[in-house]
Length: 180
Image (cartoon, rainbow, N blue to C red; front, side, top):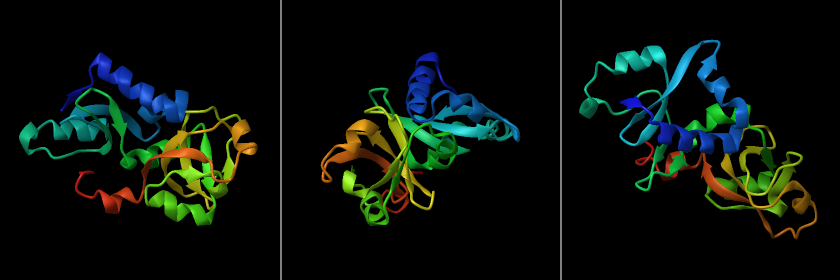
């Protein structure tokens, strides 16, 4: 368990800023205490500083995890966000998409979202921007990348992809072994 290096921090914050923008500082300076990000076995954990101090007393080989896993660094040092970060990213999301009930099931199985399944989209969403995907009942389902901007979505064919799938809450069941 160690703090992120400067390069890791830059890569990690660039990925987070695609989804929540400048709201990253709200994750660190919370009213219920001070939080930080720590790296352990190529995974980035979001942890309360008091819990981090307690976890430091456990030797690294014996420590499985602590806090909430936000994602992991690949072997090429790219950062991949995990669905376990969804509950922390959703309240601060800049761009959101709401799915119709008919498209929720397909998204939860790992498929991309077509325009026919799009309920609403945040105004002025740029193309290739990170977005949080919600059900029409405002339940966060996952996150992805906008394949089309808001303006392009209005005038496109119903069978066109508008959101590229990245992670969803169905991964808890599909990839149970890999999330730990």
